Structure formats: C-alpha cells, structure tokens
Image (cartoon, rainbow, N blue to C red; front, side, top):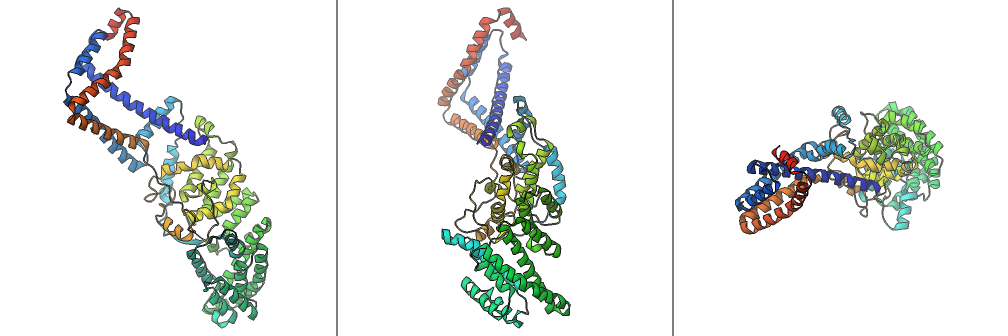
Length: 554
C-alpha cells in the first residue's frame, strides 16, 4: 500500500507540475498581449480600469476566436503527444516534467537512459524470430494418481483439461512406443494402452502386460495413474527401473544391426531417462533433496544430449531448496545462453539471485533519494528481463492472483508457464528476505520499455499474440486466464484531449449564444482578477508612490 501511495503521489506531482506550467504559460501570454495592446499606464488603478474597459468592449467574436485558437493549440499538442507516444512509448510532457521539472521540486531522476540505450543496441543482435505458440511438456509436472486425482477427490474439480491429457497421450506414444512393439506381446498391449482414453482401461491393460513379463512402460503407467501416494509411485518406478535398465542394455548392443533395432534403442533410452527423472522427483517430493540432486546430476552426465526433458529445471528447483546458490549460478551459466530456448525458470531464477544480493537492504524511499546502486540496477534489470519474458509470473509470486495445480503441458511466456513456475518457486522467493518487496516495487516498470509488445520487444522477440487462446485450452475452466497487461494511455494525452474538447465546446457555445457566454466570461474574469486587484491595492498602499512610479516606467 505504501509503494502504491508513493507511486500515486509521484504521478499526482507530475500532473500538478504540468497543469501549473500550462496555466502560467497561458497567463503569461495573456499578460503580454494586454501590455502590448494597452501600453500599460503609469498608475495601477488606471491600468485596472483600462483593462476593465477593454474587456467590456470585447465582442463575442473575440471570445470565439480565443476559444477556437485554444482548441486548435490543444489539438496540435494532442496530435504531437499521440505521435510521440506511438513512437517512443511514453508521454513527451511527462518525460520533460520528470526529467527537468521534478528535480527542481526535490525529486530524483532514476531513469537509466544510458543503460537502456546500450541494452537496446545489444538486444538488436539478440533478437530471435517470432516462434509459433509451441506447447512444451512441463518438466515439473505432478503425478496423476498421487496428486491430480487427490485434488479431484477433495474438491470435485478436474485440474486437467482434455486437451492437456490428449497431449500427454501423444507424448507417451512418441516416447514409449516404437514400430517393433507388435513383435513383443507385452509392448503390443501397452501400445494400445497409451491410446486408451479411459483411465481404468489403461490401468487394466498395464496389469495384463505385467502378467506376460516385466514391462517397464506398464510399471510407468501404474506409477503415474494408479499409485495414490508418492511412496507407492516410487516403489513402482524402482521396479520399472530394473526392467527398463535390462531392456536398455540389450538394445544398446543391437542398435547398429538395423533401423528397427536403432528405433527400439531410442525408445528404451527415453523410457530409462523418464524413469530416472521421475525417481529423482519422487525423492524430492519425499524430502530427500540431496539424493534427488545427485540423481539429476548423474542423469544429465549420462545423457547430456536429451535436453527435451529439461532436467536442468528440476535441478535448479532442488538446488534452491538446498539454498545452494553458488551451484544454482553454475547451472544458470551453462543453460542461460542466447542459443538455448529460455524459460520462466531460467529468467526468474537469475533475477532471484541478483535480487538476493540487495533485497535485504532495499528501500524504495532510500532509492528514490540517492538513486540505485550498481548492484540494485543489475537486480532491477534482471527483474525487467524476466517480466518481459513472462509477464504473468509476478502476480502469482506476489499472491495477487490465486494459484492452481500446474498443467502437464505449458506454453512458454504464457499463463500456464507462470502457474507452473510459481507453484514450485514461490517458497524460494519468500525465503530470500526482501526479494518479493523488490519485485513488487519494480516489475511494472517493464511495461514502460515495451509499450507495444506484440509488435516489438526489448530483450526478447515480441510477445506472442496466440498465448491466451492456447492457455485457455491448457488450463481448467474455473481458472481465470491471465492476459498480457495492456499499457494505458498517459495522463497527459487524456488531459490534452479533454482540454481540446473543452475549448472546442466553449467556442461552439460562444458562437451559438454570444450574449450569454459574454456575460459568463466577464463574470469569470472579474472573479479571477479580484484577488489580483486586492493584492495590487495592498502593494500600492505599502510602497512609496515614487518607487512604484519608477517600477511602472521600467
């Protein structure tokens, strides 16, 4: 609340600065006009009487011309403001008032124009082509039987959509089957089981396959869907590991005997990697985090080319749980590379590490007075980078939006990825003192750098326009899908538009009702000049007549 109030006060100060600047500029030109026309007499009383006489002799055409000219000038300012906002993403008047007028009122200009210019130059070379809205397997997906089904039993809601489960069925057929499965009865049964839509039919088929022989994929299906606890799932995965390791060793020796054996070896490799990864996730769920980290490291060393499973994201989450931040930085140094696809886990973990160095002592009030230090600037830039990649995450981390169970598939830069990240990493952000406060104070500043994210980005390629549609297919209907925050028009464009409309309306009313508007204008001006007349009378009574005579001559 304090930060929101401070932001509102800053915006109110800018509005007051602009309003007073505009009004005093108008009055300055009015005074110059009167001085030029009336050739200001020597006595102030004569001056005021002459001004009153001049105003009384004005015709309605003068007021029409005055209001029409004001409307024209306001319209020109509006057109210029709109053009500047479309091109640069900010208001020209707001930028001038913040950069030049606010320091005169005691504020501090924290804009990092030099840094942003240099980052703009670097980002031009880092741009990627706009990719399609590709759906990825969630590397931290939950277990259907032990976690998703338990949620359904308690709440009566289905956490997974048909589209999400259909994608999982396609993944299973791709990873766990091959063309030679029909030669082995158990594998042939499992090939049909992965295509079944009914969960009970799949489980029955898995039991039928196990009656024939020890089938690794049958154990996988039972561990994923029939086991009601993580401990049961781990026990079944260990049986699957024993069967899968034997198949892998046999197919490894025969892989060069033909394309059929090569495809079978590829399938056995996928099965073995999947089993070991899920065993590591079971250990992590059961609190054996160090064991899980060792299993993930061994798996990444044994199969370094299988990046499709994104095992490094599981490793990052486990290392954060151990608070092994140096090891987290080492993993990021390897995978946070321009040639590799980014993810919310990589971007926000990098931001968390940089925020950790300054968040415990960060204060928005102190930063507004002295400016940001180098470490604080690096942390803010890392947060802006992460928010640009996925703008939906901060609302979940700051608990401005309720979390749900993450889906089995995610859309990068979408709401589904934000849910999957925040579901597992919210505790890590809370553990770092002040990290969420720093995120709360700085994350919205990202949208000032990218006013039109669908047309151009800052550090990444433009934000995909198709994410909302895909996320609605992946996420359950009871969840309100988060969409990209739309940048609102600056206050000064709205103010100028209102001023233009108001003066145009005055010109129209003066043209239609000249007598009535003339009376209104005279009454308004006399009321406006009343305090000035009172002040001038007091000044004239206090100052000697000779001194006032010399001042009026000057």
